[in-house]
Length: 567
Ligand SMILES: [Zn+2]
Image (cartoon, rainbow, N blue to C red; front, side, top):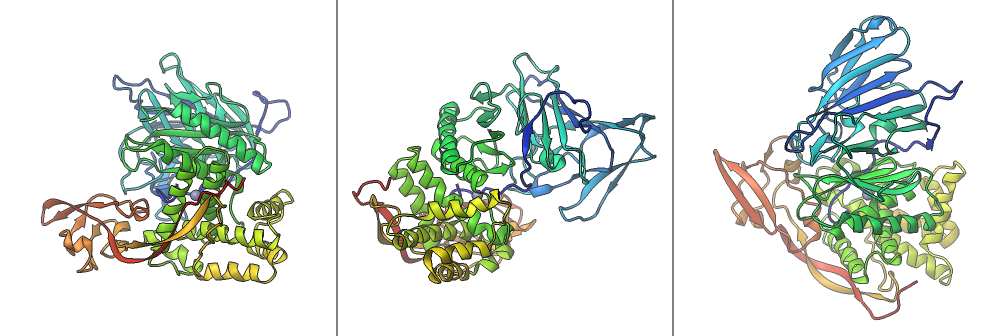
């Protein structure tokens, strides 16, 4: 979860998904058709490419961004691009734009007037190259153990304009060995679906095919399923059986029975295992040799929470992330505990990681409005919406219980707020504040605004139930030891080194070039975790390891108190 790794929120918003008949009924609008044909795996089990066929009822210029979300797409490497319409072969003009809102893209447009539907074919190669600019969500095409996977955003040429609302996905597995299967965020095998935004949906659909493992063996039409390839270092089928139960628990808690499949996809990641990304109605997570079942349990509990709770309409984006991320952190551990998926000790471990990271954060008082512009530049800012937001919800729960003589708490207030969505009312700050005022009077909105302004969030001793109690301790602040912006620059050249820091004592110098990405969000929550920098200095390679900790400060933690569980 977030104490461990920041998981990127879905870039593309949900569209409703309705299973529909397999064929075009008479009078139905024409469908956008997609066929995927993976090549045969080589002797090492690597699938070298996927042949893509798209049929557009109406053709507009198609495009593919070069580097969306820092993910290298196949825009520069695709081959055998051809197009046809009713008049025969359709010449395509290729242009690259210098900049656009989502970064530069390559475009393919018709070289003559188009007649009727257009069939576009091309081959998308799978390079298995690590992300060129360090950490990136696991969306690029990748292949191992006789299977491939990737998100539509990394390999599909699609128009920017609105598309038909019907989508037909067909898997051509004729080149694959017997037993190969194709699954996607849309469900198992070939699918025909009605979508509000077929283009947006295709970009945020994850595809896997080949020799896969699935749980359950036959994915359902609605609700939880999981699919993976590679060799996970744990019993994933067992873990997924437990996640399926948690998903069912969420459905009850949020009174929201599944209307479409919810797919959890996993694959190996050689660079930053354990991370992942939420996509529409699905989640992609990665594993490596050191990722544990506990890491994945909390990560998945967090991501499924996003699916059910969603985020604010206003303010959206990073400024509203105190709500979506705070809720996900708070409820992932709480509901996993209530559902019996984690033990009280695991609950405490997770809570104390959040609390330890928050109370030692040198930028704890940063106003919420300043978070967006410094989010990516400093790990201490990046984790604030998660840590502060989740502790605010714990404080609020205690206030609501006190005001209602333990009749209602955060659960009820949240359900009231989320119910606005069913009535097509916005989830915004105004509505949130008026609910707070109804329940708590003026102190409700006041303490909310104080939280946004940076006030310390300190839940009471019994905030998590009589089973746990608060204790004080001394913990050391996270201290990188040099200017943190360095780590997101194209060339990571150390500057602003603090002379008395652990980094300097370990031998780091201004001017050293750090040659590998340095993930910090995890390390920040672990007092004893060291950082290892791979450094180049005057043509020499050095490895520098240190404990990135500075000043010791007062902090709060929770421990077992011997009382009964809350419910
Ligand atoms: Zn999240």
